[in-house]
Image (cartoon, rainbow, N blue to C red; front, side, top):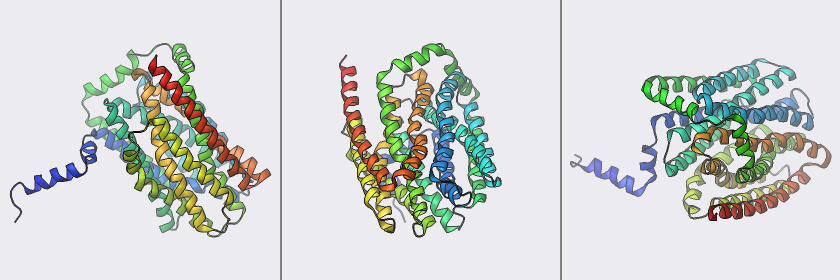
Length: 425
């Protein structure tokens, strides 16, 4: 028989042993809905998206540069809309934006499942890019809207990234285990995941007090300066511009792993390609999950820019491994994924936190929308990487990427000096 009070004593002991438990329990209910949606949609997304390049090369017989152009056009659409959507969400609130983006993603992934032509894929990927442009900055801004305490908000961003990585790990493995990796019909699963998320959000909004909903929406209308003033303030925020330039290069380097590297392995006829790609994505996610909170704790005393530099050093090592690893060395590519994941674990949550730290409270959506320009690096990666791959080969591409890592380190040193000077003033 359990002694009276033993259960509460055990719970208190657990909370003392793991203080993170307390922080997790304090997150608002709506944040949990967002985290659930991030997990479900990202998991189903990575069940299918890494295989887009393989489908286009093997089924539709496109070259590496054609695939790169194809994906980059879709990405540019997303980047151009990201800033506009961020500003709009500050004016009309986040709800309508999220609903529209969810519907667009559902339509896009259903089209990918049904269409069997190159133009069909182009239209569907374009719609998906528009949906993601609306989705990402709005979700980030909602975290800032709902959680007012800065430390809790940073912790919530880490939890969000944790949910992304769990979904990214489970998605590819699920596809392999169900023998549906790379199957077009699998896109229906991604569409269904967005539908589940939309239903969960609507139920949460319906159960929230009506006064809160009205108040939340009015805040966004009442504080906004004219659009011209908004864009002018963004342009003159040198700290924001330097952050965006640095992040564009980082995502350009990272983008080579999602597009150019897969094209390189496909062209070179790597053994067990589908299995290798799935294992690389899963290894990246699992290692990130295992080390995220370890890195968060160990690096807590360092400045945000020094943390970014440490992450970039891991990126540089990964690019060197890519340049000199043999195509036939299966576990060498897994090592690449593991090394990239170390850098990714440190860098990616900090990208969001960087923007949150400098964004005015009434322009959160606008600043997150401006941060969508970061994706220019990612969307240009398939195109530029594909051209370099066609002309110079895989090893040269990754040698160039390792050199760009050095450039980013210099930029973050400048960024650190700029921020210190701003604080001093």
